[in-house]
Length: 457
Image (tube, rainbow, N blue to C red):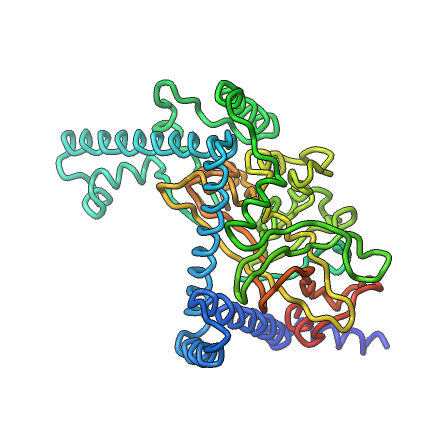
């Protein structure tokens, strides 16, 4: 008996078995990407019901030519376009209603400070390079290969931009209610521009002081401007985008169904309809997730991407929907940084989508994206409800534009819900695809068992 068990264990750990599992997981990733390509490309082409078959045929042919990586690029571009459009709508609504927009204004100021810091760093590097040329002529091999200014910048520790495929629940017990970093070039950036406050370090107290400082700077304006309520913002978004979201009791008939996510209005096939809010952790940062290692014990709002990034929506709660919030307070710096974002965002409710009941098919699917606000619109970062966990002292982390969890200069790691068919005034259902390797709740009915096995292979 022991020998048989040991034999099975060795077989499972063999190189062939591991490759087979990886191949299955990769296959599911490719299948998801193919589906997202068809959906988001269809929406991008604004295909109508009359020519739906022709469009689908054309897109299938394009997918075959593009291959996996080409489809990934196309999906990323389609989602970037949709996120840009929706966040622009939200910002425009608040502008039209003369809202004080504290989150957007804070991101605008932070972008200006980061730009000035970068310019000072570049000027310092250029001056260093000029001094090197004047003292040593042509310079050494690095200066000869890259140019004196570039070599000096490299030696001083330049600012290098970096950014971050799709879903899966992190574990089966994640509940029934739902399924990066420039190290500051310290010497060059130490001299902050006159009259501009240096961004606070994002320790929990630093985030709180940054938000308090931002609010204090805006108090004179806010006394003259009245903030738009979350209900009025959602109604205005509905008028502009054709749909909005609300959290209400689920239509699923079981005791643990709780609240569900409802779409009001209409959304088209392939349209992005919701954003998954919360704190984001890469695999190297799992230990920083509250409650580690038993992160799902008191948290049913964790979700993962194929690249291993985990999103925790619990600290976001309901944002400011109907004035309700449930978080007891930030558990770490990244949770606290969520307070710098626009909490009235009517799209940041994806974590309320339920798994469908038996006999019902899901009408949305998750799509991973990395969104970067345009250089001339850093304020749009305020409408992406995610903060990135960062440790600027960790040598294993790549460099990027800032050590701030909500920097406007870099890509935001996120997840969205995309409509798999036309939707109208109905509850949104998401296939949780819970792992078959651990016990699952009694209310859970698999949509596609083989798909789950591939995802968790």
